[in-house]
Every structure is written in C-alpha cells, then in structure tokens.
Image (cartoon, rainbow, N blue to C red; front, side, top):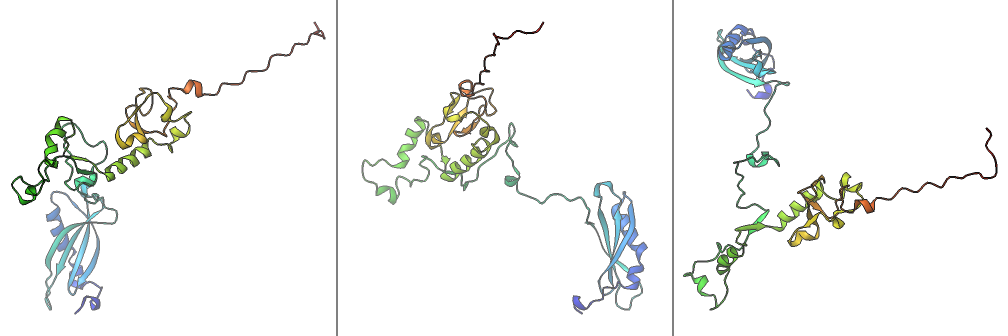
Length: 265
C-alpha cells in the first residue's frame, strides 16, 4: 500500500502503548526525567510514534520520539526506535559554516595563524621564479642567450626587498579600497560635518603605488582615524587647518550713546 493511501489514524494498539513508549524514553533519557506525553502520530500501517516532552534543562523545547509497531494480526506491540528531536521552540545550534566563512575582522589573536588559499582572488604571483621551467628543459633551451629570464630576477628582487611570492591582485586592491572607503570615506557622518577633507590636512601620510591617488594614513593622535587608512575625501574636526577654516563669529555692533538727552535721576 502506498504512503498516500495509508490511514492517518494511528493503529489502536500502537496508540495505546503509551507506557511502553514512556519506559523506552526514560531508559534513553536517564538520568534526566521525561516530561508528559504530548501526542501520537501514525507513521504507517500498524506503526505509530509517541512524543514526550524533554525535561532536560539542556534540551528545552526538544521532544522524545518513540516509534512502536506490531506485525499483521499480532496483538503485541514492540519497540521500534527512540530518538530526540527538536520541537518548534527548540534551541538549535546555528547552521555549520567552514572556519574560513566564520572568521570576522578582529578574530585573529596572538599566536593564531590564518593561511591564505592558493587560489585566493585577492593575491596574484609576484616575482618569485617558481613558475619557470627547469634550466635543462626544452622550454628553457629556447631562450635566447643573454635574455633576462623571470627566474633570474628572483635574487635581485629579494635584494631590493621585492621578492614576495604573491602580491595584491586588482581584485584585492579594489576590495580593500571599497572597505576603506566605507569605513573612512567622504560619505561618513564624520566627513560630512568636517571643515575640510584629508587631502589638505598636514597630518596625512600618503601611500605609495596606485592607492596613493585615493588614500593615505592619518597621523593625528587626536583624530578618530589615527593610524588608519583614510580616503582623501574623508575629514574630521582634527584637521591641521581647522583654526583657519572655522568661520569667525561676527563682531557685535558698537553701542549707541545718546549725548543729547539726559537720563532722569
């Protein structure tokens, strides 16, 4: 018989086997007690599941599921399965995520290691020579005599401080720029109320490379962005020229003295 034609009414003998189901739930829950009987549902022909409330304080909202069954034309009900399942108001753990997706800025502590994936889109190969063919290979033999190969640049790059295996890719640069722009950019509330932008501030330390055109580092210890990368359009009240940029209040009009009339004594 298919599941669609099965009766939703539990078998009478299976539905009456509450004590059998309770004993099985108590054995599984020991030493914690089992709460009251909640319901019974039909799982199929002569198969029913009894639900009991879990009294374990660590599993609030969970239910003990005890499935019982009997054979055709049998008058005795037997135990089938016992399990603990969450109810509608059960406290559940959050959905599992790999560690690389659980990390948040600021989670890294002293002694922690955060390795970057080999295919990290934020990075691209630098001048390392690791992707060059061996000297005795057919590909290397095709190089013309005197040609400066990439592998030959490795020792020179290390001597100049440029021997990093990987450097920021365009994607990594754009991602960093968007993050810095969001935190310390011209659209922030601090920048909107500033007398001028960081572009004209004497405390701005420019960056190098392509990021120099849009970002710098704040070096004012009293500024909210001290030691952080800021957009040139960012600004705050600690601007180096704030004193000259603040409009001076208007001078009050001189007092009017009446030299003609006389004040009554």
